Image 1 (cartoon, chains in turn red, blue):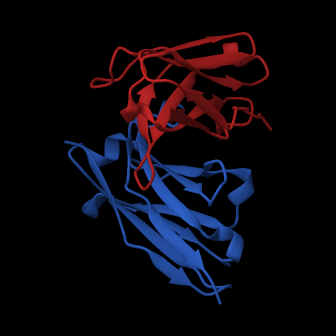
Image 2 (cartoon, helix red, strand yellow):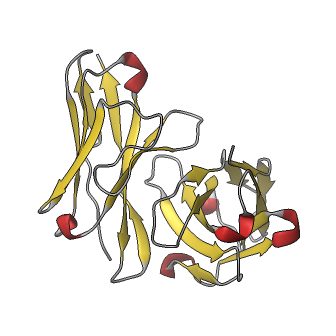
Length: 108
Length: 119
């Protein structure tokens, strides 16, 4: 089965840039979606189809996907960005949805 | 606006079954696919399966095949997820999530339902 690998945690100072990776075999050939989840809340879509932002998501959030790594980039990080971030991919070979393990973003 | 409202927390004994509901509003229920996702404590989310709310066709993750049944009631704009033969490892938060097709991203999420399996 397809496996997505994320770092368990990323720390960044306010105003700096955070990069959260999602690794998978030839993930660049798939489309990646990113979710933000705060404690006790439902996940919120922040990036879809690799690099698109839903309405209401700040321009500070961006995404890219190439080779074996997809990346969620959060520029000018704010305290309110502190949350868990998870990638999601549709694996057409198995007809299954696959989640990454999630990354806890800490704003120092 | 689109809302998915799930039923409340459940406590079940091992071997029992649980049925979680997800009531949709703010869109045409039959035009979307409803997925179910579970997240056990400290674990990554797991996709369990989906149902085409229009025709009722359901598809399950291999891991949950035979253990989960997803249904819907179009008159109530509600999807259901029933999990059988519960074990302590099934203790988790269960989410419903809607998408336009079974292979497109999950637009909307329910608030989650905690299912605790304990003797």
